[in-house]
Image 1: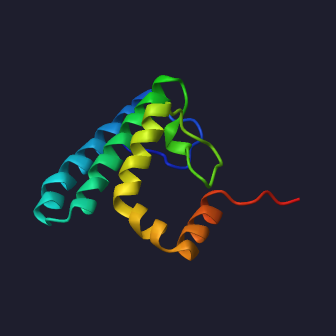
Image 2: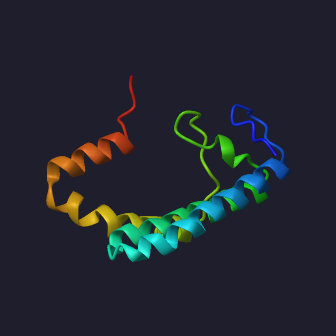
Length: 118
């Protein structure tokens, strides 16, 4: 099955196939990631798996997660506990770095939460 990534209206079967492929990639990542011995790198697997769960929840809510990204300004359907888990994973990977350097933290926050233009 070919996924039309330019479509704004993917079918549920297309989204299910994308989820299946995403799980294959994530599952393939975990073993080699653990072999690196780098805990923060392994956390990316948890991050990916949570993203997949959020995408599945978005699909189950009747939304097309394949079009949910900053380029379309279309968000995913996310529960508070999922946001908390993603923040925990991101914090494990980058938190100490961003907290230790105010300039980096400022850049990060400005990029993620830009001031509205008037």
